[in-house]
Image 1 (cartoon, rainbow over the protein chains, first blue to last red):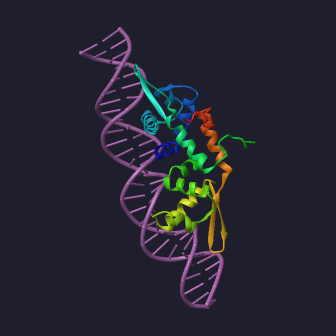
Image 2 (image 1 turned 90 degrees about the horizontal axis):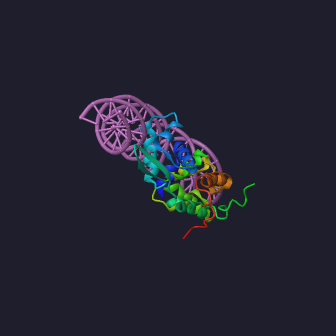
Image 3 (image 1 turned 90 degrees about the vertical axis):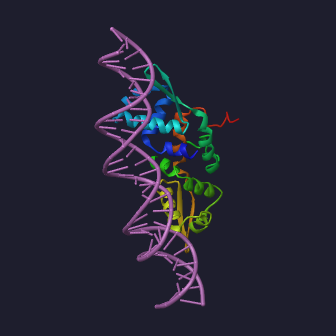
Length: 93
Length: 93
DNA sequence: CGTATATTTAGATGATTGTCTAATAATCTA
DNA sequence: TAGATTATTAGACAATCATCTAAATATACG
């Protein structure tokens, strides 16, 4: 879970997760939305993959990335433990 | 919000948050549960305070720390945006 | 096969981070 | 006021991190 939180600590990676939350994308298409070199994006994708937050599959020349929700529960569980009763967004005004 | 996620990226700080989730504690009592110098703990508390995740008040010689939930919603909102429908822990098996 | 396209890997570099010891600050009490 | 206790600040250092360019890998297509 440490890797999960570390992966979330970078704004570029959080933005990538938000993008993938709207649907899967190729590495290249992800990179197009950032003013950053392709290797840097590849590095971030690798960190996200290492944290099991995304997964990638090859499709021809491209690699298609999508969310991997397997560790989501672990991350949320931390919030529930620390901030009980805040998980349901009940008190969002 | 960036500071919030950065603050969560360290296991010592997450453990401090869990401890404070069970009730407020003085800096010294927090430090006693770690094999780490007092200045290091103080540094972590400062990071947590800078991220608005905890707050501290002086009480005599001690400084009492407690959770500050003001940014919890922002952090949770990120999860909701990326992983919609996972917030209620409905699918926890 | 040879070239173009898509992506990753390798290696370098500057910035940030976590930790430590030593010193400082704030409060209490005799 | 002097000494003890609690906690922070200052400064140093090694490790990690985000980024870059250059090179390598993988696939597609003529």
